[in-house]
Amino acid sequence: MNAPAIDALPDGLSIIYDGDCPFCAAFARLYVVRANVGDVALLNAREHPVLVTSLRSRGMEINDGMVVHWLGKLYWGADGMHILSVLGAESGFFSAANRFLFRRARMARLVYPLLAAGRRLVLALLGRQAIA
Image 1: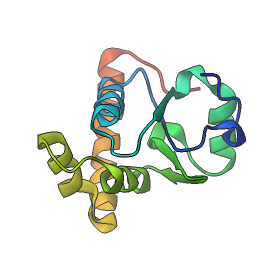
Image 2: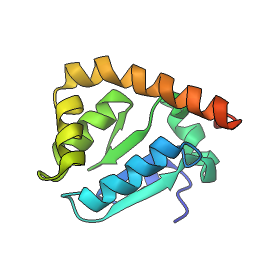
Image 3: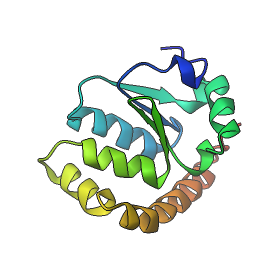
């Protein structure tokens, strides 16, 4: 799917993530399997530079957090993980862990920076660059 800008995102749920980050990519794929909301559009930010520019113009640095688009609203970083935990399936280990960490917005804001730091470390260890 070609997403030139935020206004062109499909209705429903979209997750804009770093496809070169093994954790981000695995989470996005696993979330789709467990989703409770119907169709989910997964957008690798590295393949959509116009979308990345549009997000940055709204103060959402994709290198610091994934973005979730749900019903016309954008959720970035911890807020994105929080909305995904609320929308996620109710059963399974992944869903339970996701709900435990991110269902409460305050807890999500405490945990998410650790995950983002881990992402940066993994990308550095793998020799991968930040999203331009």
